[in-house]
Length: 577
Image 1 (cartoon, rainbow, N blue to C red):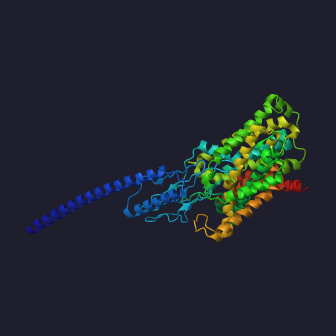
Image 2 (image 1 turned 135 degrees about the vertical axis):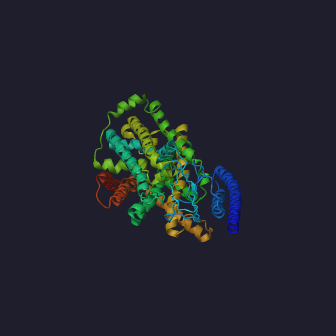
Image 3 (image 1 turned 90 degrees about the vertical axis):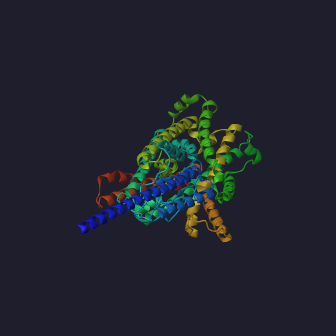
């Protein structure tokens, strides 16, 4: 009995000790939880402050990146987690911005506990808007990785479907719109309409295909983010060789677009300089200067601008570009209706019925015009920044690009047909040259030239950085000391690239250069590479077997080969004949 009493007392003592320990542990847990809540609140306040930053200056961006890293380190060391697993740090998406991304691409397929992201990607290329460039803002992701393997979800941006469609429309509509009336003169009214419809539709379809391919490329690897660039997608789907081809074509497209700016400025200022009757300001200051001299002057002017690496000073070009292009289209139509030839839109449309409906030859259809249409609509190599900036690109991008293409196609088709009715066989390579050079019209032309002059270094920056990375073997995101040798090397590379742009500008007028750039570089990136990627991913998913869904891709690819080869041959033949 004494032994049983002793066992009961021991059991009670153990129960009491256990209860006391449980209470103590509970109290400690509550205390820790309270501390965690306090830390979470503090972190949220810090993140809210980061949300207010506009990421305009490098100091702010490095501070944001440093704060994010400290927060991640604190999380892993102290055991608390952020109140949200995604910290969005918005940048100024219009007109210029840069972004910070802590997990754009992760080399391993999983993130384990007690491990933070060890690479900070500071994008030094600007987010661009207007005139064949676009705005984009990425996000910082801080995925929770406490004591378990986490699946990384594709990060999104902040742009809505409407905002993305607007940015895509800005990419399409630019200086090339003023060359479309001459395209219709070459193609014929019905031929030009059909050519622009086919090009716009296929460009839209291939851009939608690119977006779908991004997700198909990582469909079997849920821990890998979709590719964030055209080069990366090509490498994942087709291999390193194809990625180098895309890399080279992107460089060619960048420099080619810049060369069309030189031609546009040269032709426009030459027409003003030679017009003694209007007594415009250009003729008063620099009378009778030929086009080549103006192009040399333009190249010499953009060279020092292209050496500038603080793109914030060019922020005004976005709004200026949209104003200049829309103003140019409106003023051209108003001038034709009210001044020359006058008579209104009805008379212009009546005159259209008297013009040819179809091209006279195959060379006119491709060598003189189709590439210019591709120059406008084939913006496949520019679409990734818009995709990366969307809230839900997988769901909304297809609708955004279809809306943008439909609106821009309608506006440009109407503009081209009416202008062709105004000027008929006298339609110039750039329809602006059909306008006189009075005070207001000359001011508009000068505004367009100024816009392109300051847009040049922004568009040129991507091609320049490709060359620097290739020649100097620099890390794109590094900020090494600017030694004299490095500065001279960069200057030489920039000078050589600007000289290349000038050389391309001597191939012919604006329409010829735009036709060559659009038909070759942009045409390949729009009509050949996307179908090849789609077929490769389809074969990978189907175990290498042919699928009937690949037939449209083969047809688009065949069309692309025909367009690229025809435009190249006939344009060069026409230029050197």
